[in-house]
Length: 237
Ligand code: BTN
Image 1 (cartoon, helix red, strand yellow):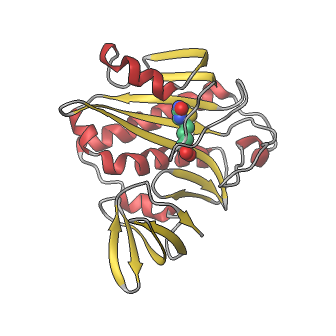
Image 2 (image 1 turned 30 degrees about the horizontal axis):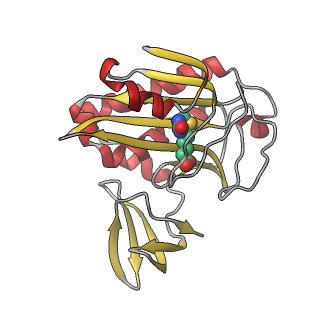
């Protein structure tokens, strides 16, 4: 594993954006503390020092970069399978890239691309609530940690190794063209739910059909089926 570790950094995603040119494909950057951790839709990602897993994985392989649309869901699937191996029940993937335990969020993923004339790299940024005892503040999605579920501390280093291994396995399956779709859809959190969804600036109530074979989200908008590709859609269940 090509790993860089920082006790404190602004954001592991931002670090890779600044330095990707000098770093190898699949460099793994981890931090104990982020002073400007980023979430999706310009939100912040805050986490206590040393208690949780926060890292970014650099992707420079062109074939994997082309799978941009599936990478969030597949990364979430890799995290979910590791969490499942710890005996956590009620796991699901909330499209496009959150992992939930029942109705609480345990992992968030921020996928970012750097483009010049063409795509230079992708950065998969992952935050997993591991040994957090309690969460303070207001959250759009109520969080939960592994410790709160398992009632014991989790060895962060061993957990990190497992997450890394399964992410690499997942990326290898993208490279070799192995389709994980049938496995992924067994964990579709939004499937069959009704939700308010912001489409082109308009707030609409839609029915969610579920994750489609191309990893977009299929919805029914007043009977008309549509596929949503962007994660800039906000759902309110
Ligand atoms: C979200 O749920 O909104 C996505 C959260 C992503 C957080 C991770 S923590 C490691 C990496 N560095 C960041 O600044 N963000 C991601």
